[in-house]
Length: 102
Image 1 (cartoon, rainbow, N blue to C red):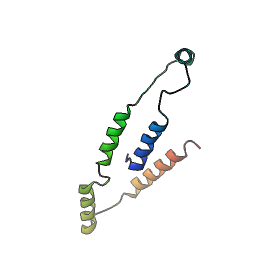
Image 2: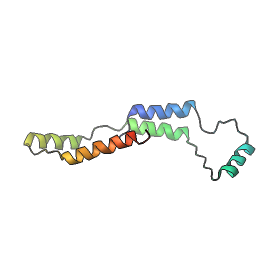
Image 3: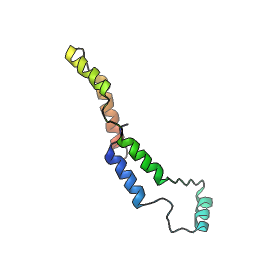
Image 4: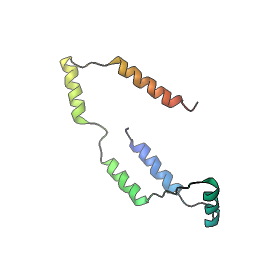
């Protein structure tokens, strides 16, 4: 899966504007909800970790140079071929993933 800078910025900004754990619940209310609702998991993300991830992702390239060079060479040689069945399978897989909630 490829993660773009826009997606990363969205997640970082979302956590900055709506921090986890700042709810209007008292500790007692949270305990009651855990008992009545069954299991409960609380996750917190350190903003420092998010910033470090953001800096790491910005330093990464979206392009794999060696793969691009190999593809260019196979196209130039006339040896590049596409498996149409694999393309069709991936298209159907993506379509199903996009439409499974509808």
